[in-house]
Length: 167
Image (cartoon, rainbow, N blue to C red; front, side, top):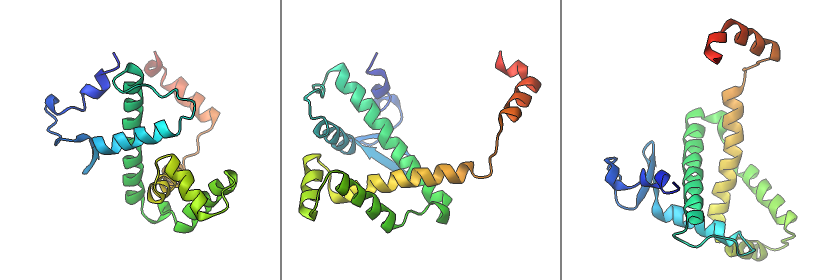
């Protein structure tokens, strides 16, 4: 059922994660506090009151998705660091994205923007980090797939010469 994915994160499965740590990516811990924060943000972003009660299957689904999201963010940050210069996101790019959000939400002052973020339980630093990771993800993906050109004909050729693999 729904709780299986989370059971693997507990400290009783021999993974020896310290108390309060729900996952580890490389040498970076993801804490229960970070997961709780993400869920609080998800709930704050749900305006129609449809966010599930804590302890329900629906809530556990959100927890699982939230944990996957935090793990993915850490992986992107690692990959961007490994990738180096081609994956660096300049502050100007982050600012540009935040300005676009301000404009889209018709927020004309800095206070209106910080209030908008606060309502969604985001600090400015958290908003900047999320935007940076989104921009890093694009750069990492482009960097990894750069030089990979694969046509439909290539795929067909591969398939016909490796048919046994596709049974």
